[in-house]
Each structure stands twice: as C-alpha cells, then as structure tokens.
Image (cartoon, rainbow over all chains, first blue to last red; front, side, top):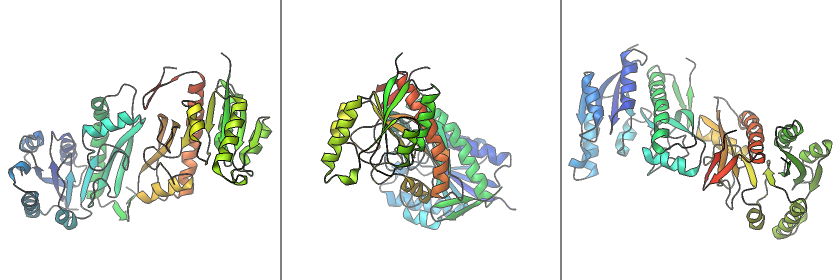
Length: 209
Length: 209
C-alpha cells in the first residue's frame, strides 16, 4: 500500500505535529507528512518540521489585507501538494468553504474538549479549559473530528475522557488533555491512512483493525 | 453521627432508588430514606419502597388541574418529613422555585449524560441517548449535580464517562450508562451524608475521604 500524502496546518508550538512526525517516522501511520503550513510566522511548529526535513511554509494571515486573498493562497499551496489528508493540529484560522468542499472527508481537527461540550466559536486553546473549570465539570477530554462548514460540529472520529481534578488550572488541565490529544490525533491519522474510517452520516464507524 | 433524612422523588421503575436503598441498608450511606414520592401512580419505584418498609407516597401530577396545586402538595408533603437531602432519581416533573429555594444545596439530580452536553429541556430518559447516538459522539456518561432554577445547570458533584460503542442503540447505551448512574448516585449520597461536599460557586469540592 502506498503512503498517503499528509498536510498539517498549525498556528503554535506544534506538539501535536511532533506526535504525528514521530508516528510517521516509526511507520505506525501509513502516510508521509509532505508539508507543514503555519498561519503565523513565529510558530515553533515550523522549526519542528524543518528539523525533520519536512517542507515548512508560512502563509502569514496578518500580511494579507483580506481573508479571501489569504484563503486563496492557502488553497493554492495545498493544491500544489494534493494531500490525501489535511490535519489541523492547533490551527486557529477558519478554513474557506471552497477548501472544505474540495477536501471534504479529508480534513480532520483536534479539539481539546468532549464535543459537543465546550466547542464552537470562541472556544479554542486555554479558553476551552478555562470554561470547563469555571463550569465545575468533573470530566473533560479531547475530540478528533472531520471538519465541516461549522465550527467543531463535524463527524466525530475519536473521543477520550480526561478527569478534571480539584485545583486544576487551565494550564494543568491543558497538559493532561494535550497528552490525550497526541494519542488521538495519531490514532485518527493511523486509522484514516489505513482506510479504517467509514462515514455514515454524522457517525464515523471504525472498521476492525 | 446521626443519620440524615433522605427523600427520593421518582417517576419510573426506580432502579436508582434501589441502588440507594441497598447502599443505605448496608450502611455505606449515613442516611435513612424516609419517603419515596412518585408523580405517577403506576411507578414501580413505589413498590420497591414498600417492599423495604419505606413510606411510599404518590402525588399524581395528572390529578391536579394546575401545576401550582401539585407543587404545593409536594412542597407540603416534603415539609412534613423535613428531609436533609432530596434525591431526584429519574423524577420527570419540574420542581417549583419555592421548593428549590427552601432546599437549596440539598437537592441532587442524576442526568444520563456528561453535562453540559445533552442536557436542558427535552433531554430526558432515552431522548438523551438517542441524541448522543445521532450526534456520533464516542463518549457519553452520567452526571450528578445540585439542582438550581434551570434545567440541568446546577453545580456538578460527580461525572463519569461511558464509551459509546459502534452499533449502540438508545437502549444498549442506556443500560451501560444506568450502571454508572447507580454508582454515582450512591457515591454522591454517601459524600453528602458524610458532609464531604463543599460548594464553591459552581464548583463542588469533594473533601478527602
């Protein structure tokens, strides 16, 4: 079986990207990360990519006068690669509807809560964990899902719960959830690349390994 | 330490009530179930109560012309008992604001999902599990929380996750969640009756056992 081409979109330090790089390197993911694209010039994820000989591109959102030009640039850059799978690994920009349409069923996102709880607009990064703690919830977690036109609503691929501890701060909770994110993002990429994910409406069936 | 007086409100078969009866009987809950009140005459929970020598009362909601009269009747019946703890164990009527005010911090409810997900008006019984399955979520669970004026929004005491399996129906998922409900409702009653629950805003701190 030939390896699938993967593009990873990032905005930050890229620890989820690192988990993917490591899993691809050891062969557990039947795919090759062809390109890492950041929407922010300073993202450490770009350095991680370069260290591993992966093409690292920055399409700096702030350098574009309007979102449409930025969207077109990203769309074109991805089309050069023709990825089989696009992974949003802490990517904070909203994808254009053209991009989502073209790569429907091929874009996955990781979210640091058990969706549908603590998802949607405004829920990203530490804001999610802050909201979880303020709500008094005793269980949070992480979700990997396919991306659709709305924020955090696409078909759920994998979820895993994380217990909220007394005294947790957004930082301490984020740390434990992040460990689960690493596991889930790699597992989802593995399953996708070995053709084990089957969408049935909003439900994603995981075929027997 | 003297035993606290517990009132349990029910609408259905009362398997959560049974879990509480068993736990009280073996002494793990430092409380005594003084009364079981159903808002439906046919509820099997009433028979369970009688079998164990517990006062079983029915305040049949349908026999009242308006909700206010029904609310007053329930309020008065509870006041005769002066319970230290009121447990809603699958109770489907909405409590009056007077009742909630008088017993604030002393009323707990069990909900068959990980709140805030799949909670609020219209989410009760199998409707919850149906919505979970239709959403494609991979994790659900159960929540025990203090009751406030709104539906399913009060301070969360305990939560536990339950994995949603491929092929689950509302019935099969309900069965596994119910087992967790039994555990959580008993645990919450134990903690409450041994004075181990401390509210700090929306957060419920569990004191070391």
